[in-house]
Image 1 (cartoon, helix red, strand yellow):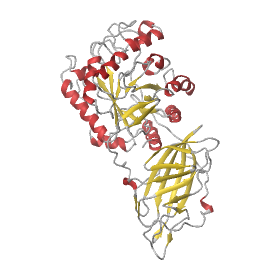
Image 2 (spheres, rainbow, N blue to C red):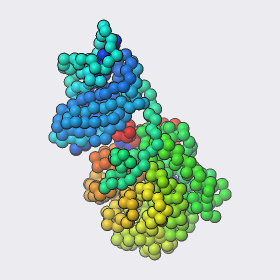
Image 3 (cartoon, rainbow, N blue to C red):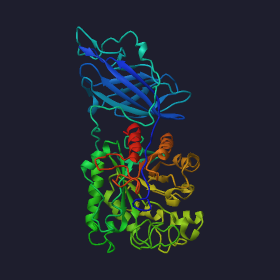
Length: 525
């Protein structure tokens, strides 16, 4: 973002392609029965998201396996959550996890997955729970057995056949469960780049899905201590109720380094660094991937699109500066090296091509190589220099790089991509409804080629109408390409003047934030 209140966060309303409510019978017990609701959500050509809610209607059970067959050969599970998902041929199995294995009478749990389809994407016609075919209602056995291997019913109930919902909802609203709190997450995973994917240490594909948390870039340089709002465990717990698994943390170069430009009252130097480390470590321990990002930096620029005329780090500058930026990234890399759950975003929104109307090619050369750039009066640190600064510390963390035009232009990103000794570079873009690249045609022509080569995350998304129609389309496109996205911003600002996701730090969504919350409920772990 160019200024603290500029840009928004995003949401996704997803249509339900089909819904079916099916009665299931668990393992033999005195009273057995359950219901399953399966919703195809966010369907796009070749892909879809499905949410499945299982409600136990019989006696309490501990440990469950949900099974079903895809009706079409071209349907498959690609990435699941809240269960261990496996598929053999057209048969799919979802096994309970420790946190949701116990289902009391009338207790429910919600699970889901992202899938692929070719030809058609029909809803499964029947389900089993612990090997028992759907029978409907609750049955009582005269000889209760503790065994989970009771004989299945001869045939599923015909009344349980799939049928589309009569009035599909326009937003993704997960079915309620006994608890709105997410399960314990464990620590965020260490990440690395492989081809065009982010992978965990176990080889699982990982998308960066979540929000920005503004404050660390501006409060200190304006003399207002450190953050904007609470940065404690309770605020992180509120994020996790949205299924946020990535938080981008904008920082201020001069506050981290403790320069004399930080006014009295602003946190800086060692105190600032400690605050950042504490918050980042709290995110990691809570199972959330932190992206540490240099947002505002030193250097005077008064040319086209200037955010301010101040030499201090009080606004968005066109490029990192050679005076302080390498030292900033040496310090940040030393602080987090060895913890590859932390991702580095080297600079918020470059726009070197706008200096004195320089050409786009000159902008990309400046972007990569730095030095004396047309129209920029300070010496620039190019991204090759900053990548080298990080790697010289021994840090192997994943590094994110944006493009030109406030990170909205990735047209020559691959051609000017810096070299990296670890191979852990990925791309990011910022997409708002008022940007040049703000439609699916542009996404296909400019973003998709990058996403086919390296991991891509849309690290700021939003729109300036306090709504979510624009980002609905954007997130659906990103889902189909395996691209991550982060809404701007988890701050309780007035959505009409500075678009925000929340109205309070308990996580109450604004009208703008509700869409992102609903979308993450459908696609995030």
